[in-house]
Length: 89
Image 1: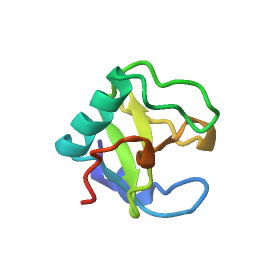
Image 2: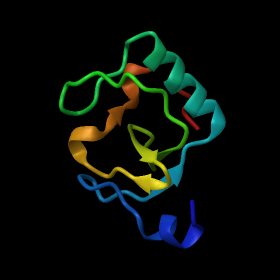
Image 3: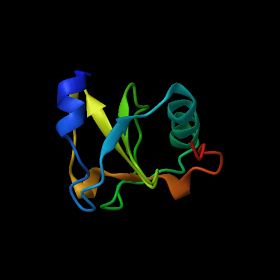
Image 4: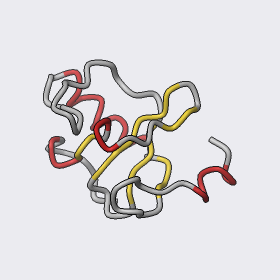
């Protein structure tokens, strides 16, 4: 993802800055998705693994990136408290 774009993005509900989710966090999230443990903000299950994602500064929410386009919708956010081994940093 382009660094200039990333510097402009923020969480739509908390206005926190977003950062690219590191591989360790992405792996933990994808394990939980494969186990059927992850639902989106609107309650629908996240069935597809993520290739790329953005995380809020407090690491409570993740927003997926589809084909290089961030999906910054509150109802599409993934709460990290659903992921037992989500890294704190």
